[in-house]
Amino acid sequence: MGLNNRIHKFEKLNEPQQEILELLFKLVKYVENREQYSVGHSERVAYYAKKIGKRLNLPPEKLDKLELAGYLHDVGKISISDVILQKTAPLTFEERLIIQQHPLTSCEILSPFNFLRPIIPAVKYHHERWDGSGYPEGLKEKEIPLEARILGIVDSFEALSSKRPYRNKFTIGKIFEIFEKNSGILFDPEITEIFIDIMKSDTITLYF
Ligand SMILES: [Fe+2]
Image (cartoon, rainbow, N blue to C red; front, side, top):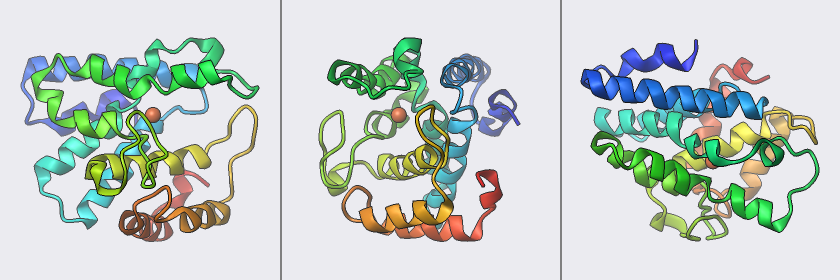
């Protein structure tokens, strides 16, 4: 099911808001098509982020926001050139800086719309890491908004489970190993445990 078919799920939104979402989902789709290996990425992030949110007993409005943030977190990659987005060789320092701008660009795209402002913290901080080694601000532990910690974990799982131009995807066993090793280092330990548990009981066939 494509992104555009998912709009009906946010039925609390009015018609102009639905139209704005439709446009933004199209932009996300274009980004994913340009990156190629990431087709369906945002949809999978939204799906698993919401599952984690449910396990944390977040209220329905928060689950909706988490899901929307999952769909829209990488929309800012639209400003990154194909040369960088599709590069197979290691990125230069300057190219990495350009890539690291994308959470802020996503926020720039979303922030004019009042109804999307509540998802800005999740989007802005989805590349922050538990030990402060992430970007854009190097936030640590619970300074990172909960929704961003959730997205960061699912997003990292996605990266490891997809084939890149320069490497194959990791096996599921290897990915669990990486998560267990980095729980409390890169990732919130409590959410990591929940996520691994979900992935062990869920349809891993989505990926493998
Ligand atoms: Fe991202």
